Picture 1: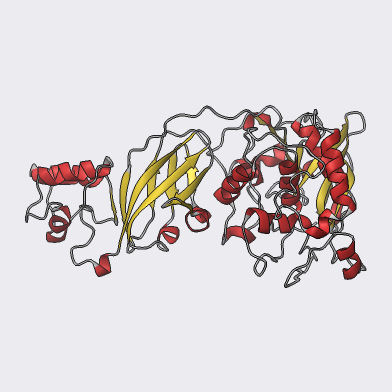
Picture 2: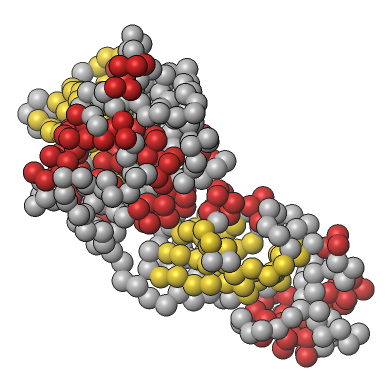
Amino acid sequence: MKRTLSVLLAVAVMLTSVFALSSSAFAEDSLAYSQEYMSSEYYTKLTTALNDHKDSTTQERMLAVALSQEGYKNFATEGYDLDQARQEGKLWTGKELRMNDNLTGNTEYTRWAQRYIMDRDEASQYADYDWCAIFVSWCLYQAGYYSKEQLKKYYYAYIVDPRIFYDADSWIESFNLNQRLVYYPPKAHHKLDAMPWNTYYNVDVDPFDIPYKPGGLVFFCWNGTGDYYSHVGIVVSYDKDTHVLTYTNGNSDGMVITRKIDLDTEESFRGQAYCKNADRILAYADYDQITPPAQKAITTDTPAVSWDLGATSGLKIKTNSESVMASVDLDGSYYGSIIESNMVFHEGLLSIGRSELSGLDVGTHTLGLNFDDGSTNVTLNITDIEHMPNGLIGDADLNGIVTIVDATMIQRYDASMTDFTDEQIAMADVDKDGNATILDVTLLQRYLSGFDVVLG
């Protein structure tokens, strides 16, 4: 299987959503399933699996969901009749049908991702995606692993336009798995070394000794190099004596299918490089034991921040959150597709790129920051220095943003400890009295503390 290009539906790890099991599953929301799918055998098998496993663990229920879809075939699979696919519920009626070179376009699972999670309309939802990670997320959602709201938050936190076609190199992070339950064989060092902000607990685990459990997630690098995640599957079973791993997966030859891999064998598996199959295992993860983090008051050292459209860099906001992901609202509405496409959140420090901010309108905005362990708001003032004769008021260091560093610089200038250019003096003169003084420092500090202060 070629290196997968995939929408990564990032998974929230909180088990806060109680799944309402019924013969219609989530059918109360008309966007959750296509009418074609609901009339198919796969929908019947899905609801049967959910009812039969309502008392099972999340991991066991998720596997049952995946196995219920066995045989679902991409309608574009070679030799598969389009009208037959539509009749069997494997294709939903739409305005446009597209396929990529691998014939991995429209499926019920990609439809769900685009229509139900991404809120795309009928005219724009038909994009071409490889769908192994989408299928895993769909199964987790059906099993009640997270709510729609959590999925939308975590999906957008890592995977939003225009990053939607990027290589699938961050699946462990995107699924937001508890690192204490993730096991990495030696081959995974290529990935771990590239992601130093995470803490790893189970490193250099022999791939033969990984505690594979039914329903757990297994991540592959088909060429055996460990350089990237190329596929994700769901463990069905593992024979410790023969070292045969059985897994079910989506988008394997254009269908949902269960396969076996002998970890002892050296071969050219799935059309990839000749190597030992054990080297193709890049990670394994459980998730049943994960519990939601305690909620707390989120604080930040920059409750108000200004940023100019002419700045050469983005901005950073330090918080006390211990989450590994964040989502962003702007003025009360979700705004992830703009801000989060290249956002980095590490150890409480939120970094937002210049390209994401440059699309915002000039003026004052409320930036809502939402984490696993709480939420907070930050006042964001967007300016445009080219259209403001007085520049960005308060920006004493002329770096395009207003922070506590500017207040400190004005203090030093007022104490004759540093010199300012005429432009710096003009920017530091917050109260517009013609001087940069301690009064300007006070106003700037109040502004940065979230008080209703207008700069300039």
